[in-house]
Length: 398
Image 1 (cartoon, rainbow, N blue to C red):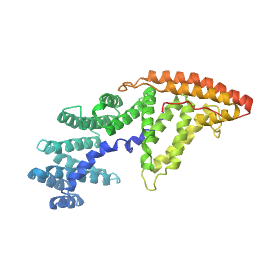
Image 2 (cartoon, one colour):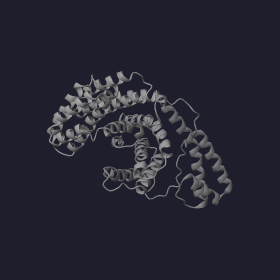
Image 3 (cartoon, rainbow, N blue to C red):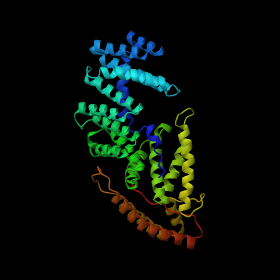
Image 4 (cartoon, rainbow, N blue to C red):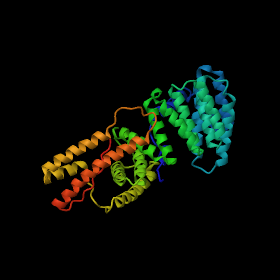
């Protein structure tokens, strides 16, 4: 269905929650990074003596209980740094070699370290299994993490299950990932806002992959409303919103809701042109392609509405002003009907732990009824007042 889902890998949604893990890791690592043993481990790594390096750090973790977590964190940080370097080369055998040696050392101390060290190691070992295309082993480590946590009412549990869902996605088990994320959404009141955002966004992607367009629209509009309210200072603040708008617009286009799709494509183009990707940013090529694709799909939406690609589409405010200029009484009638559309778009507070596509469909039917009346007014203006290129966008819930 053409959804752009690549950005979930680089998006910043829920970063505050995910980055706590990284912040804790580096906070611990900073306590020993200038330690002689840690410096020696880095020198061994530079000499490709990976097993010696990781054994040195593991031994010091066991010998010094007060520095156990910092030394374990050093193992993980140095492992990740080596991995990021080898990703940019063709040295697959070298990467496999150091990962295997790290894995052997880390797994051997798993049952002898403290719960905090164990939490870090289990997450990292699961990640390595994913890298090595061993999802079942990854699941087994995540099962241990979840068992250690012991309760669903914590951010640690949500992050562990989120990692579980991502592993399922990477191995093509999208239904499994969907079920995990839906469970997290149902229990979302237990978790911080950042984690809720991550879960909702990934669930939005999963619904798109599975072709569940009713749910994509429902959850997409929820995310859109939330992210549009956030302050945008520079490009780093806009990537989340772009991803949601693009996926949502593509679903509207597929559903032949051309006006809704066109409105979102306009917004994407405006954001991409206003907030430029910095030179050297890894995302630059993605967003350059996003602009090309969006402009192409906008033309499809315009064609679907029976318009040329350069036709000016008026907003409700512009149409209202045009009506005032032509006929104040008609303008007042238009205003009242727009208020009716607004009232049909606003929903009372309800339990949104589960998504109901019927709600979206009923709202669309009501809005389309009143929109037909307003289009009739528009035709009247055109008939009596000359040719005016007007297409009114559907009002949506604010």
